[in-house]
Length: 443
Ligand SMILES: *Cc1c(COP(=O)(O)O)cnc(C)c1O
Image 1: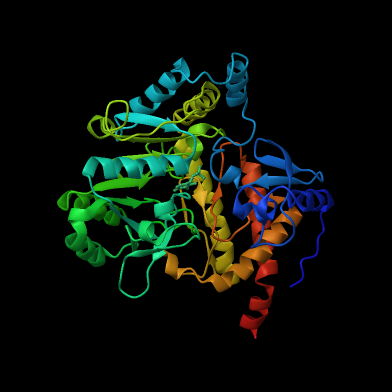
Image 2: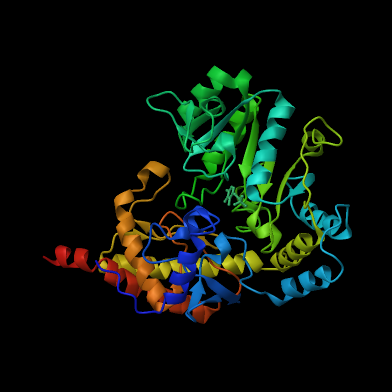
């Protein structure tokens, strides 16, 4: 398969070349480098609503949405106006401010599962702080995480399962000391017996279980409610804390995120992405009792120079106000369901090995026809299809995150026409990607 460019990409290519001199690999976050798809990464010049335009003048229907934060699309008037009003009054004071109170109140009034919050500046920071809180609260150091869940680039979570039956982790990044990795126990999602065994053996050393209740960073590995309930019950039974990392699912699948959707109460929740309305915001929240372990009330230290700055708070407030409009999440979910169902129906009709897991306004192009619930069920060989689909979609004006392990997002700015156009273009891209296969199956 050769990747013929039918759209101009010269300016992006030149800027990317230049960027190599400034940043490792030319980027400030690794997946942006387009290494698993074809061609240079696109330099985006602007975005409005459901579309963005690159520096070569190509226009794309955007399903990456800045990797999740843009639930209202680009340049939403309500968010933009509130941000501009705020910027005019100064951008940061390093003091408490009215906007952080307002955003805090808006969240706590509409979320049954948290009583106190602390704002930080990224999802990674939220997770890092939540782990410290869990360790400080319990006085223990080990944590349990699951293969296939991503929690940001926190040292103790850049850890993969060790070899053999040993569940002790080994670091998945250079620079993470093995003695840090050893405190992380990595289990497969859904293995209740192994979880019970691990908790029984180590419960006196384990501070918390951390999970993405809707794992959406390594494909979309939708879990059964009963598994999340099992985590809840076992955490209580063994007296360890349960952390839901809702950086991607929080305010995305419902205002109360996965906790609300499944009605499972975790002990600590981490937030990011949607909560900042396109600005760098993260947060973690829990009961008053647990959060009172945080400084200045409690012994667990955590701080931030730009935490809860008024501009980021204004963006978050405006974004979440829109999310609270009646029917917002129902509408998002039904439109996404329609789009996914249409793509899936076409794949089935044509005999293409593709299905589209989706929940709320998150979807994933999954290869094969079997439901995928664990990381090890993803066949890396199938990523060749994604590479072709991604390329074809760029040529026809649809932008997906540049890796087959990434999910897509539908925003409220995507119109019915946008979604119909996307279905048609994704189906046409599948025709190209599976052409060889189709011929084989006819034979
Ligand atoms: C994106 C993400 C993070 C990391 O957030 P950053 O803002 O990129 O640091 C952590 N956990 C989950 C579940 C995420 O989706």
